[in-house]
Image 1 (tube, rainbow over the protein chains, first blue to last red):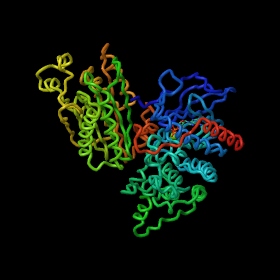
Image 2: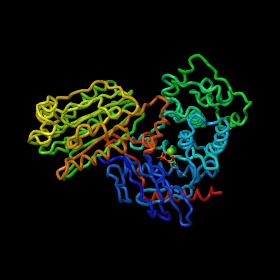
Image 3: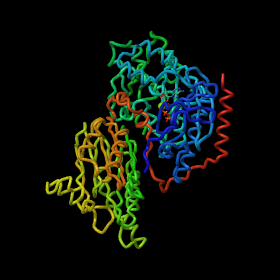
Image 4: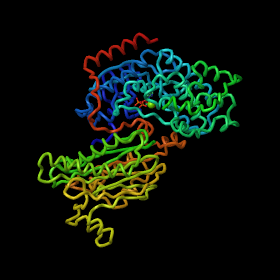
Length: 314
Length: 306
Ligand SMILES: Nc1ncnc2c1ncn2[C@@H]1O[C@H](COP(=O)(O)OP(=O)(O)OP(=O)(O)O)[C@@H](O)[C@H]1O
Ligand SMILES: [Mg+2]
């Protein structure tokens, strides 16, 4: 059995009309490269290469795919196309722009506008525990503009988390990695199954059979969890665990000295386990983030509520 | 459940690789299994393949998402794999059933459980120290443990490859089980064949894993073992995980290890599954379908630009 790490294309490699500069990241499903086009403009290129199915060895461009995996590999390609389809329709300053899609090396590639900066995750690590309220409000208000555009196109992101929020050097955020679009297709395909990052996925995402429960509120949970992570410098307790035994300390209780009550309540509001109690649209959340004076709806503690949520999820 | 995993198998200097390794996981349970098909016996790699495949499939049937009783599972899976090998031999009228070692480990609820037959090993390592290790079913190795011969002498002992328990073969396997071993963040569990531990001095493996960076340490250890194995290096295989505390609020911190994007690995790793029976065939995507999809996407890109 082969190792599971894939070998990236080497620097200088001529890929279609692009020249590979270096690898930016290597994930289980794809590799992202920095490359230059004919005009020497930098681009980010995402290569479809799930390491459970296709492995490239040192010195090769073509991955080797075991015969029994060919069908699954092709099927996963279809899922990769979903990411392209989703992004193609969206042209917004806070959503990464896809520029081209092409086929080479027996796989497929998505070319994106290259953004200079770093992920919110890296930012959180560099500034552990010293992220200010104004920063959180500013970043997320803008990011939500992008997310609103996504939802307007009847798409859900479903994988919002600090490592998929990119901060340009000018401080503006960009939503990247629409890879979760593939989830709709790959649920029954074990080799392509995504693994959620614990802590950021909403409780209803753990229920594969009730897709109709997913909605804007699902992405909103992840936005809340990402804001929580800015404050905690760590991921919050995972939603499936919270359903069993909720140990997540409310933001309002944890940081009353550091952040305004209104912001903390907004975070807690997004992270309610019952999706009906969260902001139901990005717009509703944006209003809360923009207006410090605005009060946040209180949870309705109906008897047996927790149980009802659990019934919905299970 | 969060962990980083790396597995690799190499032929060494041998013409065939008779080692087989695999891992598989559900949302809450992880299986790792290593088998070393025995050369000299007919179809060594077949026995290893049957064992690994059988145990993996049993796991996928039973871990929903937790196994009810991991030890019971291991006991059933190893014994049934043994019988599956015997059946294979009987079906083909083989004069002798093929044989393989086997070590398998389950981790769930941050507790490790393992079982083995033969001389493929499991090491549980914490901070560079061995928490637990399997005892080989090898007389020579037992003599070393009892101080009857030195480790040096064992390397050259004529019976060093002889083991008294394995899957397949005429006698029922003697399977040894570990204790329930609770794991902490940073603990390493490593499974390997004798091609790895054989050529290495005993302290090398735990020390190599003291950084916990299994993505780098595993291939490095294999390089070292292969080099020391020399002209006749045996097949070498290894699976290693670094356990990452799952529910505690460490998710972001654990990614800060600057070595590799552990985050993207652990959260996106795909389960290994051999082509399984009973799964429905996937709709086929032809070359034309691919071309058409690409054209559609590029058309949409142009349409929605600016
Ligand atoms: N357009 C871009 N400009 C600059 N860097 C990018 C861009 N897109 C991706 N990256 C870099 O690559 C990393 C991984 O990208 P992305 O999140 O899309 O892939 P992934 O998580 O590996 O995806 P997948 O889940 O599809 O395997 C990002 O964290 C970022 O550092
Ligand atoms: Mg990502």
